Length: 127
Image 1 (cartoon, rainbow, N blue to C red):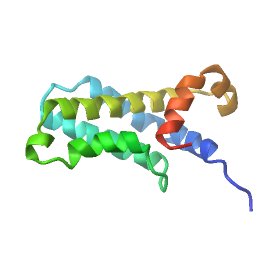
Image 2: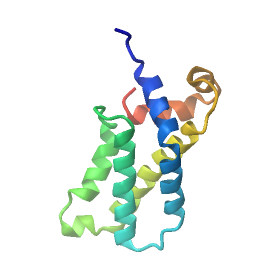
Image 3: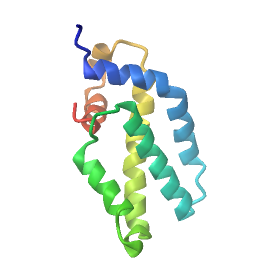
Image 4: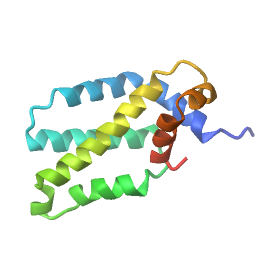
């Protein structure tokens, strides 16, 4: 039985999910600044990022940021600072996902050309 490289598997999933990821990223540009929409969008981004690699845990620092907002008490959950921080981190990784998904070259060639972007994205999945 052939062993599947988790990085190659993630990039294959990225290419498959590219239209959905691009649509979600475009939706972040249309936010009106209402907290409930920002919260819903943050949750949608995190869900999409998790679905790219089912069975893999996301980076503990990223998850901690999201959890501080999502699992907080009502005052903590409604804290604009916590929400904006969670949203900005989620959007950053979504932007990396879209950028990585748009690469047509082989994964290894692109990793050599853009090592910091690839490393940051792979770090999200602890790869």
